Length: 61
Image 1 (cartoon, helix red, strand yellow):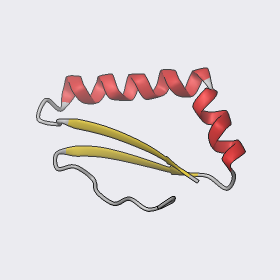
Image 2 (image 1 turned 30 degrees about the horizontal axis):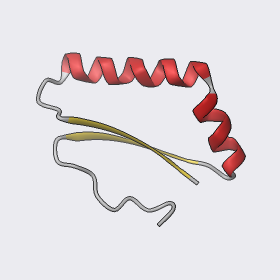
Image 3 (image 1 turned 45 degrees about the horizontal axis):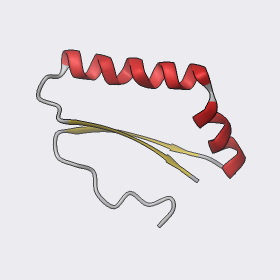
Image 4 (image 1 turned 135 degrees about the vertical axis):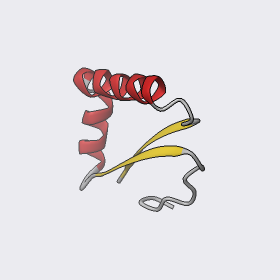
């Protein structure tokens, strides 16, 4: 179901981004700077929080 988080795994970090339109979501997914930031965030979490088993970034419309 769009816009609903059904399950967030235990020991996880979840960043939820909501959009007004599918166009906004599409632009962000294709944005090179966003992809770099996402990769940096994943790297920081994996380096600093070793007990974290999962990083989940959800893009909801």
